Image (cartoon, rainbow, N blue to C red; front, side, top):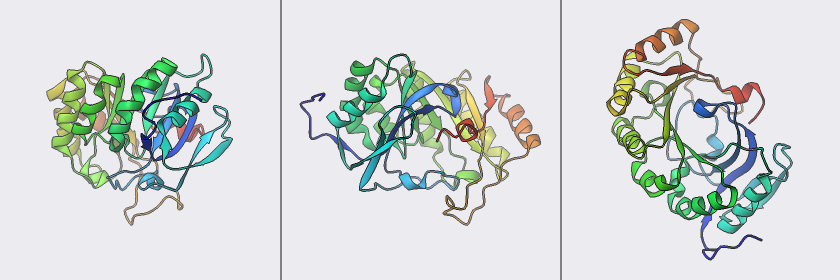
Length: 265
């Protein structure tokens, strides 16, 4: 058993597993995913509403990629999570560790203890997937991160509004010189003026920060929790929006959720 003096440090998790990253800058790479429970946002397009609260149990793969999940109780102690990661980290398989959710930054204090330990254990880069609306919590763990994928929430699509928080969050990432990119979910309800505002927000920090437009994946009946219907944008809309944003930032790419095509959930 891997030991740690701070055995009282715990986190509430959803799952730990190995898969191919399907979104953003790291698309196509193999990662160890640590999915944290809890989210303080309620985005209309969310396909992970089961992460909004903490279940009494979480699950972890016995062998990376086989989906042979074991069930364990929440919360999970830090040494136990390190043990699970060590089991996943077979030689030459993974490119990085993904902190996802939910909103991982709701566990910032835990992460400040866990991340130095997991980096020492695995020597893998640490990637944070986040709603990009908690700059204060980001500051706590910035020294331990290698890359950040920041969601920029369009009010017309997500139902959430965090312009000021997104701006500060992105500036903090840029100041530390780590790799950062912005992901924006778009649907047929996207307001182009919000995309222009998003592009200007990014450009004010750096026009070199990559932006990924991600057409929304319609929810299945089992995933639906809202009366708001999510409809993917047309190809014509996506092409128009890409041109619009490239007036302000250099790198605007369109990538759907490829992990859903590969059944790498």
